[in-house]
Every structure is written in C-alpha cells, then in structure tokens.
Length: 542
Image 1: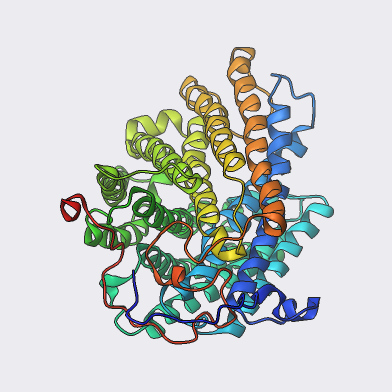
Image 2: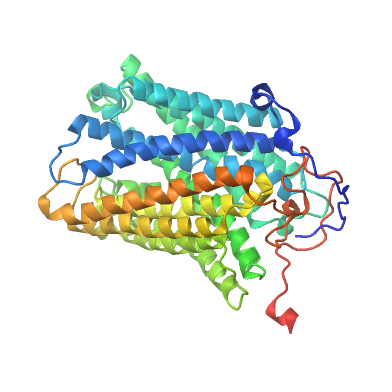
C-alpha cells in the first residue's frame, strides 16, 4: 500500500525510540505502543520457556513405558501447567500483543493506539496474571488440566486451584482491554483514504480476533468465577453431589475456548496474508474472499463448541448439528489456504526466512485442519476422543500453525522493529529445524492416538514406546529450533547490519517510516490512494 504523500526527512539518522528516553521508569510508564509491544515480547518469551520446560519434563517421562521420572500426581501438574501457560499466557496473546501492538498503528497511518494508557494497563494485568501462575507453581502447582473441569476443580482437587483460576481471570481482562483498544483504533484512527477494502489483511484478522476477545472472554471469566464460588462457598453449580451439573461447566468453558482457538490462529493467518504477497511479488488472490472468510471463521467459531462433548452425554440431534457446523467452519479456512496457494501461482517467489515459516504454516495448518474433520465426524470422534490423536491435532493447529506464523511475523517485521537485519543463513536453518522437529514430535502422536493411547497418562503399554521415543527425539530438535532465533535475534539487535526503511520491497504504510520508527510514527499523516498489495501482476509485466 503506497501513500500519496512522500514523507521527506532530514538525512541525519532518525532518533531511535528505544533510546529516546533512558531508564527503567521510562519503559515501565511508557504509553508508546512500540515499547509496550517489546515489553509484551519479553514477558511472553519468558512464559513460553516456562511452559516449554514443563513440556520437556513430560516428554522425558514418556521416554519409557513405566512412570519412573515423576509421580502420577506430579505428572498431572506438569501437563496442567504446560497447557495453562502455553494457551493463556503465550498462544492467545502472542501475535495480537506483540505484532499487533507494534505494527497495527503503523499499518493504518496512526500515531498510536486509541487508548495508550489502557494499552499499558493491559500489559500490567498480563504481568499480574503471570505472577499468580508463578505463585501457583511455587506453592504446589495445579492438577486439574488446563480446562479446569468440574467437579475435579471445585470439589476433589487439593492443589492451588484458586491461584490458577485467578491468574487466568486477570489475564482475561488484559485480553478484553487489548481487543477493545484495537477495535476502537481500527474504527477511528485510519489514515484518510484507508477504506475497509484498502486495509491490509493483517488488520482484518486483528479486528475479527478482537471481536472474539471482547465477546467471548467474559464467558470464561464467569465460568472461572463460578468455580471459585462453588469451591469456597460450596454452592451447588457444577458439583452433582450439591445439585449441580458438571456438563454445564463444559458448555460454558468451550463456548469461549473453541473461539479462543481462532483468537490464536486468526492473527497468524493475517501474518501469512502479509508475507505471501511480499515474497511472491503478487497481489493477494481474491482479497475480498480472504477478508470475508476472516469474519466467517469468527462467526462460526461461536457455533461449534459442542463437538468437544460428543461423548459427554450430548443428545444425538445436538451432536449431529455440531458435527455439521464443525465441518462448515473448515470452509472459510480452506478459502484462505486456496487463496494463498493461488497467490503463489506464477509468482516471483523468494525463499527468505519469513516465507519459509509461512509456507511451513500452510503445510502444518492444513494437516491440522484436515484431521479436524476426523474429529468433527461423530463415529471417529468416539474412537479418538481423549487420545493422543487430539493432542497431535491441537498442536498442528496451535504450534504448527500459530507459532510458525508468529516466527514468520517476527522475522518479517524484525528489521522494522529493531532497525537491524538478522543473519539469514542461521534464520533459514532454524526454520528448517523447527519444521522437521515439529513433525517428528507430533506426527507419531496421530498414530499413537489411532492405536488407542490415552492422553494424560504417565505410563503406557510397551508397544507404544518406539513412537514415544520418536516424539521425544523430535521435541529435543524442536527445542533447538526455538532457541536459535532467540540467540541470533539478540545478537542482531546489537550487531546486525542496519536495515533500510523497506528491506523486503513490500507495500504498506509501515514500510514508509524509518526503521525503527520514531515515537509518533508519522510526521505527516499519510493519505492512501491505492489498493493493498499493489505489486505488478504477470499481465502488467506483459
């Protein structure tokens, strides 16, 4: 996307907003969306490695059939805290709070988000929620699973349930405030000429994600509050011994948590929709279809929660309806994959690191989506429910999809964020290692699940050991792939070659600013006169 006004600047090097005001206080009290994005990046990275540490212990335990590394109770706490930290403190907030915070105002020609102080408050709420989870860990942990299923969480667990749900409750408010901020910003602060159908697709996905956050997260907050009320005051809400209904909690929890899957994946789709046109040098194929499919996903995400309860006593008619809807939600996702693939057709493709991660996203997300159709099928779901097939499917969507997209976006916008270039060779190696390590980790789990190995068990029959060894070996490779970018990006931030304003030759308002951008992004408000992704097509060249 190009602007009508050329932003002319002095030939002196622009002031780096990172160094504009020194001292810790200037960071802790900042209202600059770019600094807040970096604060989120640091916080999320720390929580990612906390959750990853639990994953390492899980895979080490599963190297052998016997439960010989940790006790059964400890294993329950490991997979609970792994899921809780990764879902609520990394996967859900990662792309919106880091890339969305930094890039969104630049993309729409704004000087900041609509509510800068609210943005800072959101980060502090994230920190407070994380502190409760660390406190929960330090005082004995949690063993209910990340889903907090009742009545285990309300009556039978003697672990730190209140601390755990308090942490998630607080971080939920961070999510709501962030979504509200993004919605208002997109509505009110777009540059002149930047109509809805001139918006970059990343903005469309952030908008749809924010709508899900604002509408869905309060349901999770209510559900967790009811757990605390029943646990503390013994009011019969979910516990059948007190007259409650445990299935009611599943309805409430999954009404939020299945849309939460798209809170995680939609921003990643937005990243891929930016990267593919840039490195294929073609306009996105079917822009309107990709934009509308974003809202199709958001709409259907609120209608499919029941497929999590096919074996929980759901009526046959409700199960059939949820099965059909679960198939239907795959359609808008398939539209995106088709259009990304069509964009690549006859493109002048360059395989830079962001492109490698985006191509990895398409492959892994497609596998995850196709296996989702198995789970939407009533007969197959009964067979694979609560087996490692579910774990493999979930991780192909969330880790293979969202994390690959997050890494793609980090590498794509790293020159803009830092003003530096990372070592391309190391970055491509890391992308390859992540792709290989991920498939070696989780593809064997599809086979394990089909063979009947249940999830959440710390011991298993010996015939499953070979596949579990493969999975653990893959996890060790995957870990290396995740650590490498941390190392070379820290190095590149200080010592990397300086990046120009637009090292990829991309379109978009964010690439018209210096790298890194000044504090208020634009000296002159740009005026947009052209459609997004305005690359020359093959016909144009001819």
